[in-house]
Length: 180
Image (cartoon, rainbow, N blue to C red):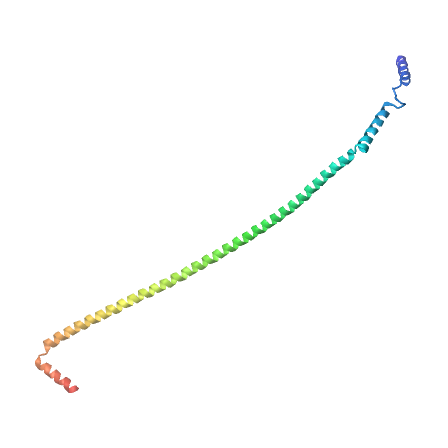
């Protein structure tokens, strides 16, 4: 164990005795810091890279804002078109319903008119049939009367001819003349 302590003491002695290389009295980490500061001063001071970077970022931001504004306008237009077409669809549905109701009313009217016309035609045809039947009855009665008159005339003529002779005709003619 003693050996380890002696070795550690020797290492500590050499560590403090050994020094890092320096230039102009600055340590290496200090030179790295100075180099970074010089580089940043050159980039931002003389090359004006920050202005080109900022300008590029500003132009990108402006382009994005313009795109967002255009998207908002397009969305508003799309919403307006959607609402317009929704209104048109609702109007078309109302128009279709009105047309359907109108067609139903017209169909009912046509059916009612057809029923009325059919009833009127049936009534007219019944009247015409009744008139034809009555006319046929009158004609049949007239024909029957004419045949009856002809038959009675023929029968009377036959009776008169059979029952009357010239003397009966003279007496009948004298009676008629006297009544006048």
